[in-house]
Length: 388
View 1 (tube, one colour):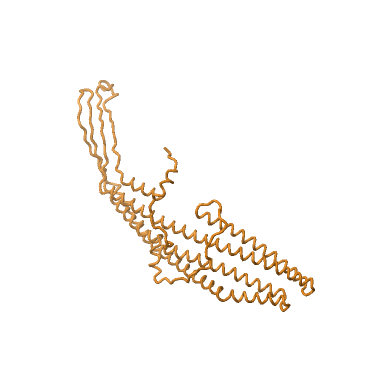
View 2: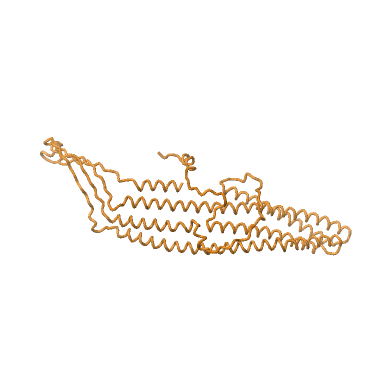
């Protein structure tokens, strides 16, 4: 809609001034012979403002550059939507796996409680172990409920990305654990040049320079030409009337407007530099976060998780054989599932940081159309009520 509004501003900038129709009646409602309309003089005139200094062309150019800025804002908003959708989708995938993990932990805690109860009845374990097993089971059930609530919230956030008021789906499909190592950026400064938040400032500077040229042109006075017919009622004669009106630029030569435009050009340059510095810092942080998350995820997957799984299985077998007490098995179980939860968190962080990097370098997903056509808005535009 903002693109359509920018098109309308370009159209408006190119329109010429409307002519003015003036009607003047003189020499009436006076005294003596001028008391009525018999001696009146009536003039009908059409005046037209003629803009000088190329104001109209410069005004159109400024409006066109404003539309170009709107296109950059459109690209920026689309990248924001893609990044938000990616993060929301990955959050649902991770939440689904957390629910699966929580349910598995509840089942293991239930089995452990049953095993502890049998050992307590046989007099092989202390009743305190039965209480610990009951507490552990209750705690895992609480964690399961939290995981399910978080999944419901994540589904709702994902549905909100496409404008859904509620999540009309049960689950999403995807390989959460398919992560690729971060690719090094040889030239970060060149990489952010595709980011519309950076690229737009070149168009912004061109627009401010166009505004400066327009303000300088506004210092030139415009000319108003007029012409018409004058009728003399007393003699029933008519005559032509021609007039020219030119302002005298004695005081107002648009000095303030020109100075403001000059300051805006300088301000735009500084903001461009600030945007580059800000994006480079954000890109560095996102690349670092992606590297850290990838290293953490791969270390947990290849080294820590297998060892934690082996330790849990050994503690579980040892407990059944009476070699280990319940606390040892409980500690091994807690370590395993905390490691699995940490792995899910690391993988989710890796995907999120990767989405941030793509957003900062202005990269679109494969297969995304880069068309800025607004034809798809025609149907939506017809939904807007006509205020007339």
